[in-house]
Image (cartoon, rainbow, N blue to C red; front, side):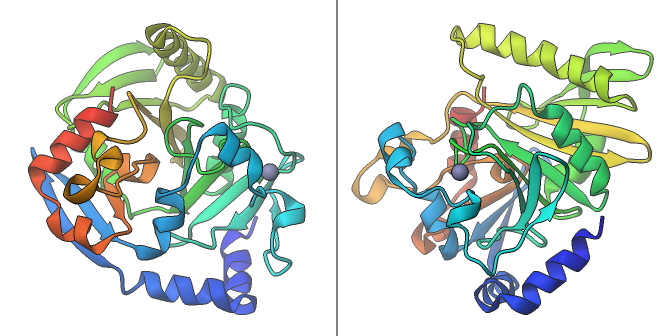
Length: 293
Ligand SMILES: [Zn+2]
């Protein structure tokens, strides 16, 4: 599967997309160290549409779904990944080689019966890390099942999980579920060379968090999956809430901070210059403690 070739073709044939990818190279960054871990703040005005999106049911129902084939611009082509999903370039990229993998059918964002697809894509795209935003914590299309992917090597999490102290929660025959200690937000890591074993570790966690939330909806979570040296790695960020109190504040206290998976992995996307300039370690610590379980 030549994902890079497809990406290059879309760059060549879609000027607006190419322009946003070029702009991404000029993006301003600030780096913060918290307990030895890195948070990179990214000032990215093009993301205001997504960060500021109204996500209530009525607003979602009244807009045209941008992931449905009939609403996509004709210049946006797709690459079939399997019988259910199509790879698209993300026209509003946050990071290098940013893709969306959309279900061919308009159906709700839900991980339960799609984790196996996500793991397949991670294996099919070994140079990329896959991610998933739950319908109530970061997905800007909670009504249309999709994953995203970016080129490996851009997220602080990718390096940090190896050196982090870990507490093993479950382990058998080389399949392992563990929790990162002192990471500033809750993060679980599962790894296995077997897809079914990883799915079972995930289901165990999913059920536990669903019971903690006390409802029958999908528990709030962000996921990352990657494939390396014959093994899958899955990272789970259980969430308490999607947006921090600052998002709902008025006047000076307002911040357009709307964390999804990428933010949880260490790249905080800020569409407004004033939020980017004012950001401090104490505010970062506060935001992560509010949104993480
Ligand atoms: Zn749709």
